[in-house]
Amino acid sequence: MADTNDKVESNVEGKWYVDSQCIDCDLCRTTSPANFKQNEDEGYSYVYKQPEGEEEKQQCQEALDECPVEAIGNDG
Image (cartoon, rainbow, N blue to C red; front, side, top):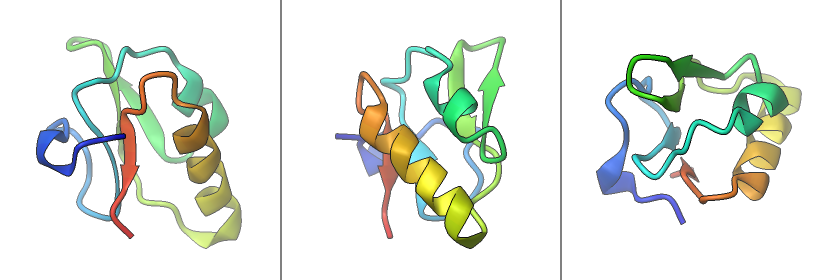
């Protein structure tokens, strides 16, 4: 489970986030490209836009559910 106290600094403010456990596997960026981006220099993904609308929320939830290292969190 993602740790709210261990969020990567690139996340935008909001309920959804990625923590430092991220292994940059690309799953979240593929599943929810409108909400996740890659920090190429540091080798992790992050939430660059909080989900808007039901479709984006569902895509973010799918990414959270499928994340192999449980690095995605939702404090909502």
